[in-house]
Length: 372
Image (tube, helix red, strand yellow):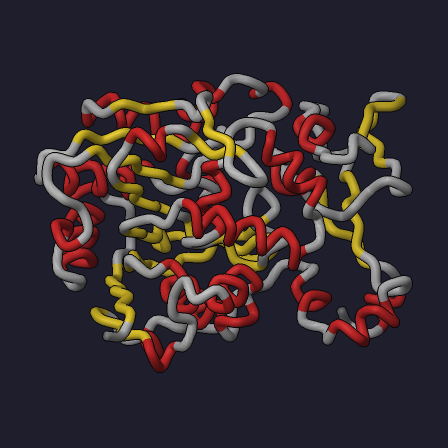
């Protein structure tokens, strides 16, 4: 049987509309009981990157989380909601602050479900994952449709990186900063914690230098769902104007046989894919470097360079970037955040966690001359 991905148009976050369209996008796939057994324990995992309100487009919108909760409550599930957000700067060890600022805490209180922290973990071969995975029967994945400076797309597969608790994410970025190696780690997590169901918040998406404050919002007006994360990310790639295997996590997951990347082998139900595909997304600055053939990149790597730079007019010195930096090459000197580029590995964790969009990507002169 073909992998199935459902797509429904939803042009606003008005609560009753989101609820209606969320139910429709699941009914196209056979309904919630096709994926989740009634009266089971379910971990709902949104994307809650930082303490930014829903209007920022950085996190999964609270109304999408509410819609998933309500549908699960209809089959009498015991529901837990949680994520491992970036808790750097003034939010260090303050996950509650991130939950509250994103609006997720309010939704969980209103719906009477437990909002949990990933403070307990179980060690796997290379990394720990949240122990809540062992405590629950099912994982429901609620990613936000965004671009990502390192992985190009943060969708169904990449959202699972949030299952790594606390600041251990920084260790993984330090040890696997090459994009190909990092993609393998993300797919390792996906293979260990494969969701039973994924619903993508694509009502307002993000393009450009996502996945945080440096990205640009884009009204795509879509909810998507599938039990196959690889197929779902393949569809998201097509909507972005890319080929599915341009996304390293999709390519790696497909190589391991973890899902279906071939659009011709995916049954797209609901909206037609070509009718929801508009002009291509504005891609992250470093995307073009990833698409250069490896032999050419080896020759050009000394001249084609990208590095983070701080816009001091926007910087509020919250220290988020300093604490997120895996190599600890950022510091404050003379009341300015500075970067020691000798140790910088261009992982762009600093860009991802900056709440003010004060960190940008700078290209080398040669990269600009040849249009990369």
